[in-house]
Length: 215
Image (cartoon, rainbow, N blue to C red; front, top):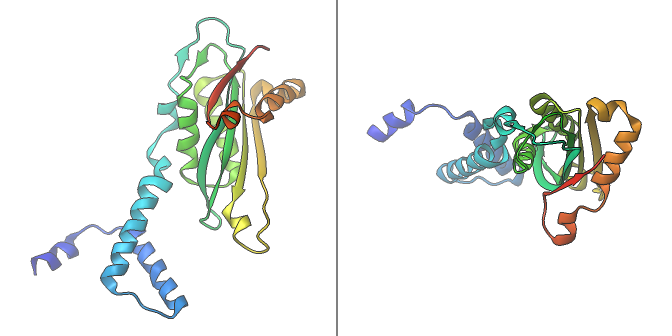
């Protein structure tokens, strides 16, 4: 009796309720019917995975991640290549994953190198489109560090491509630029050549290794 009253007073969890409805639909598709408690436990596990992992980026703020530091001396270019990421496509709720390569030209302010992979993780752990994610990463660098320019290149494979329809194997590449890297074709080519070279991390079996170059 008391347990039933506690359940009635418990706050609703739309994500868990949605997962339970989804699993009920799969049962109907399969022509079977799992027990209510078992489906409820499965729905709770799935909802927790989405809330605490797959969509954890909604709990983070890019402004808090990109805390600016004062650069000591001139820093011509900062780049981090081969940052592994996983995101969820908002069109079909299927994962896409790959490597992010980002760079910026500091204008007096920099961020700790570990903050750049954290930025990618924050923005990728949300419902996304690859095109939007690429732009959001570059724009976050521009907004919070105020560099001369910023760049982001993503290379990813998509579950909604490889697991549906003709199931082709393909890598999707997107790029976004801000500031001087958007205005200058020469600077853009220079940064793209750096970012698209085989990442040191990929050769070494690691990811996210920083690279600094001169102009």
